[in-house]
Image 1 (cartoon, rainbow, N blue to C red):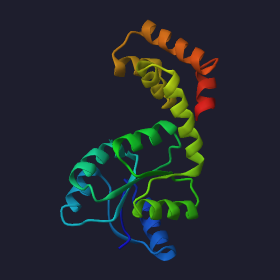
Image 2: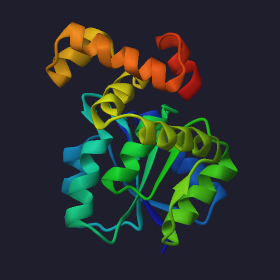
Image 3: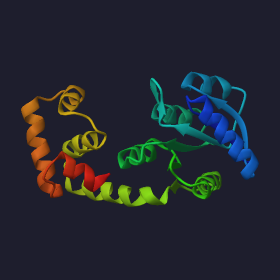
Image 4: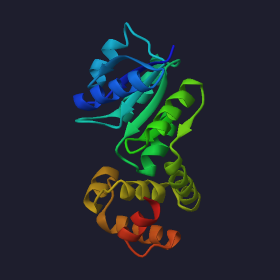
Length: 198
């Protein structure tokens, strides 16, 4: 049965999604949650076919749910749903084990297509994000592991100070890495880099 569990911290979004899904598709929203804790509590007695998870759950990250779900509920499919069209998030969702990623700007037909693809056992990536993911894969092949890690942080909008703190490296060291990234990606600046890969 096509049952969907929605995990989103915004009540109005959950209500809107449920209304659209149950009146316009053959899916049924079997339950919903606003946080990771609520999601896992409800999963103790309920098994949906697909869980739709927002990347941003307020003070939590929807990404943190994926490994736990994969370990404890391997039969349940996961579709990440977000306002972020960041290719880094797409790659991260896939690496963690989600079966699909779709943005909140996707049209209704694409959203339904994504649900059905994941339900059927396939992988789904919104068409407009596929090109960006391909670019990310190309970049990964020309950067070292450390450079690619810093590249991902930049694409996510992190400042140099935030990157230094997170990766525990000195400012000058980071600047050297960034210069190498610019050189290898033929970028003139951070803005140029963001424009090319977002």
